[in-house]
Length: 376
Ligand SMILES: [Zn+2]
Image (cartoon, rainbow, N blue to C red; front, side):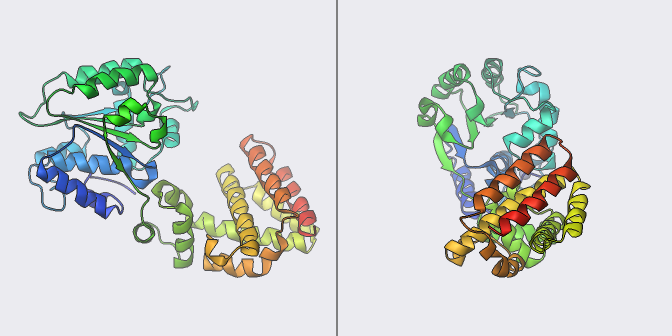
């Protein structure tokens, strides 16, 4: 997926919110501090960017920004001088957001749907926890003291992951939220408002960004990936309205392969066919680490679904038709007697793979234990 512009049309789903925002901007009754909250994968950042572009656009239609005026062009390269960004940084490397602005732009160009885990991965190979520190809150105040570049226009301060702002910084921010400079709009983005100071919450206009509807998600997946429709519905269900999760799940070849590997594992272990079990373990052992962990994740999911199938109505299941066919015969082998064993087995294997233990040994162990547990 590549986002070349930040228009509303590029934001997946969320039609009602888009209409609401457009109406608000055209009415010119814009609150000076907004808080968008919801999971990153629902599109909080994408919506905020589309909102800003619409606000700055000089040739708005009733549906979207034009995409071609000079303000839109500046937004396209994330270089609009009246849009200021703030976001968490690894403080040991960069105390203020501006120092890693190229990386921020790069990440958004890739896709404005990313979460803090992916952002951390992008900026720090060591994976240290990022934060918004006091130097950054000083920087926020400093950049807002400047006159807007466009005469009479708005200045926007977009703060992503504000829940990672430390308390001292949040208190500094509070002062400016209480007495904001003229024509300044704060757009705060947060995945969990519970972590915010209540004083900040009380000074912002809250907008809850809901999950992307199944229909919109299904359409997006169909347009973006070429996945068979039964797998598409399984991914849509499991993504739970979160586009980041849906993208992760959509590596369709991996998905297909995961089900095949899972079915093969159960078949050979149930038959106690030791040569084939060893073959299976060798095959899995020679895959990449990402494929191996993806498979283990998938196995845990399908085992849980099997148990659900046994104990609840089918409506609770999050599986494709293809998987459902397999579970029709297989689910009865997963019961209260062995589910904890299975769970522990696959979780441990996951942990060992993450720690770079010998994968062939791990998968051989998986095979032999599955053989035992299936007979419990
Ligand atoms: Zn425009």
